Length: 99
Image (cartoon, rainbow, N blue to C red; front, side, top):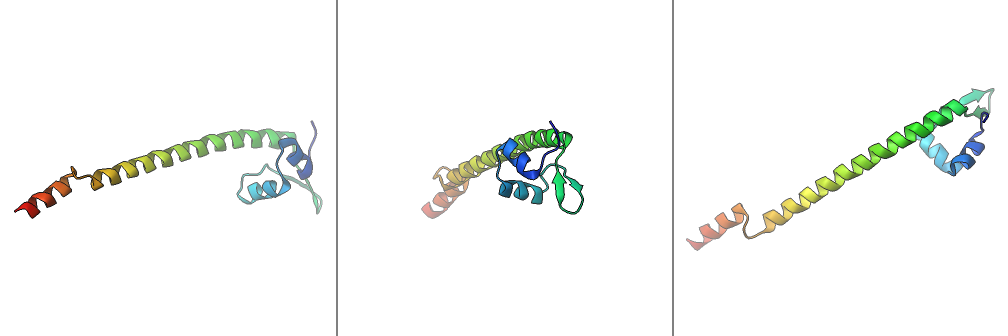
């Protein structure tokens, strides 16, 4: 495989050029080799490195989503507990109102 243009890179990885530039703006694009004033190439090494980074990024994003899901479950459980008539504070209020 030889160096690729951005268009060839996008075709190879089945992403749009808009997605490519979005990734690049976020710092998630492949390393680019600038030749002259307007020619950009992506080397085979950059392509392989980018694929590895994207795999690591996907795993880290999946882990982040799982942490967020666990936190949301904990928050929902806490809210249900507080709303329960059996919650400590609610029992104290009920006892105080019975007096």
